[in-house]
Length: 277
Length: 315
Image (cartoon, rainbow over all chains, first blue to last red; front, side):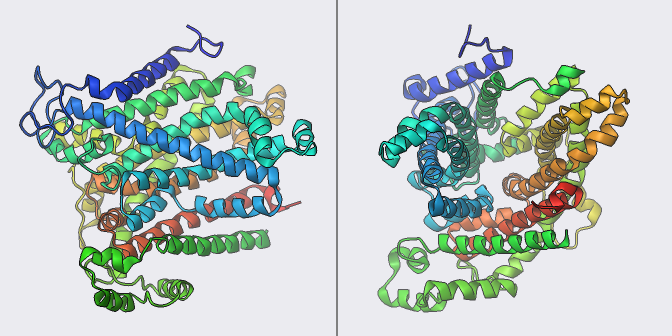
């Protein structure tokens, strides 16, 4: 099997498989799930059985069903957030790079200040003021995450903006938007794509962490972080209930990381230390 | 050099000032205001009016910002909306608890992360390095609460050596405190060590591929000597930044870990306040976390100026 003209090593294949399975479950969830996500079908933390493979949660809902619906919610929010974050970050970053002057200075300073507040703390402040709902959650995380995308996009844009073909486009009178879309973006696409994987991973963990803290996705919707929180008391009885959603979060992030790690290593040169010893 | 350090310190203070302004602005962009958010549906125009005056919301925003900032500098964070208690009194013991947990983790994690990172760089490509690469990748990519619960299952349930709830209270002896906080500290240690190991490894490796290290090898120096005399002094700057970055991360990572182990620190206090939408408390905790974060980053920059002679003479 080859991918992007390279044969992926074992770990990359594992990563790819994990990501593919999770995406399929997220997309086709409602058709796969044996029960409804809010339907109570057993006793509290019922053990796993033939009709409930992973047992029941704290109010007797089927764990497997909740996990499947949770995939949809958690992965969906993380994906929406990352796309929005890239739209904001790339637009602002390239604008700063191409226009330069005071636009660049103002944007860069504002972003520097935003970056000097830890992201989780910043999100907690905003959610504390606005209260938590899914749109607020997506916008908050997207805006905070776009600061990182801005940094990368600006750095890429600054290097591209001085090249002859960009200058030529400007001299023939193309507008700012045209220059960004037709000259800068295609040439900055490769690094932005692998960054997309990393940012997705980060946002996914971020959504899960906020829901775990009880200020992300609110009940009755199933989501993995919230499921860990709701089932946490079970652990004192030696039950595995909170570990299933936690394991789901962990596997997906490890999967994405394995894949991105390989994508990044494709064009990285072998380190000198290894070559010489 | 003193001048350069002073500049950096002033920059740190300015950043902190800007950060406080951003935090203040965040709490002002709400449509309506805190008074209507707190009183909600039952608000009558009269009760809103009274409450606004009580909170000082009838004054313009910049005056409120400066009076808030002035209060904060004197240790007055205001009063919590939900229970009317003064925030500083609740914040102080929790801050000390958080600091205790973070330092406990840092004392274990820093030598472990840096040491293993250097070791792993020296053994690049060997089996132990490859294993540590995968293990640390997994450790940094899984959420902290997953690591926390795995530790609870292993060390509090299957082998009941440590308590799963880190309950600390005033007047607790140091030994007992350390024992109770072991699991949360261990969770932080695992996550932070993994990150530090990877970053240290890659910064040592990037030094190992420079021409002067190659030259040292070609001169016929022993491996130990090349590493101790040529590579490590130059890797010190990046390693210090990594350590500071991870300490700063530690301060934020405690938020989740404190909630896993029900540890009474600032993180738990803040999350509770967010859930209750108690804006003054959220503001206060946010400022405390941001201040520690900015402070650590400033110290890291100053330290790297001190250890790296090239940074002392800006062109």
